[in-house]
Image (cartoon, rainbow, N blue to C red; front, side):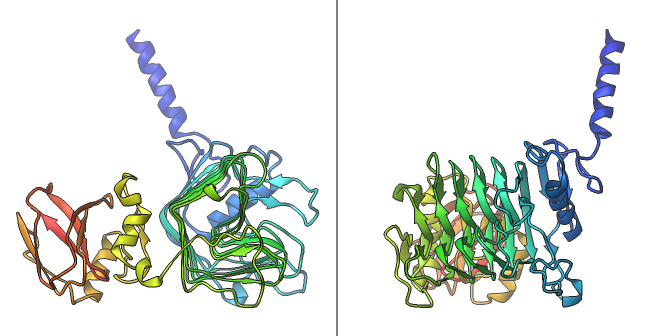
Length: 421
């Protein structure tokens, strides 16, 4: 019996170690314990090609796991462009969306992403997907996800132009898909037709988006246009957007269109929960909003860079572990917890000399100098563990009840790392 079990375990171990890769050229079988690893622009292109060309495109990624291993920067020089989508003889684009339509014809089959894509706290920059005046729909890093998941990823410094369902992250989320803890920043997103949004153009059929944001970006289209999403909750079931914000500028080019600072159109007002837009959002022409133009909860920009706004996004501690904290650079709108790694904290300490903390490390008490407004101490999960009232510029905090380890202390605009002994 012992020999039989030993042989069985050895066989299982060998099978796991030498499992065939799901995609030629990429490491990983796609199982949860052996995800497909994505570490470069070419790796992302292999994933896109796998879905768009595979004969089993409708199920090829269903239930499979994918994980980023590095930040990925796409080259943006003219001589590095690979695709001429508009047929004008010039290559303007460097990526084909992961999933979507194989052709302009709307009757052509969907190519679907149905897996679990974990950015693992990494950022993709420099994406250029420019379809020009063609009628190709579903533009973004992901064209269509169907019962799939995207999490812990950022998109920045990108440019996206398509016909309909245009976004930076996801053109359309369908059939119970989930998007969480993602951001879009410094992007230009434009649609020639309808359904345009920064994070997801169309969130449909019981899909959910939570804890995401778009910042410092421009979104434009002809109808159903929103800074965060163009369309929410069409078709069957209730699709949810929760704990999110947008500071994007919005443009709509039709006076009869639906548009909003946050979402262009939602069939159920209660499907957008605890979501916000800055009062600096604007529409750049004289278009008139439609009957269901949902702008989210408009808050002034000063509040959006404050500690209380971080607490608001974290549902005042009701959501645990917390995923939001003050901006990593020390000023600006909230960041996701995964953005603020040790390197980011160290960078913040160097850039913001005004906030002083001593002694550091400390056993029981610390003194904070030159603080502005309320001070909070966060543990490594992002949960606020100590708060003070606004007031004096010098404050002494009792940290004796905290467990030994690393914490982050923040005032209104600055941050520092502290060590509790």
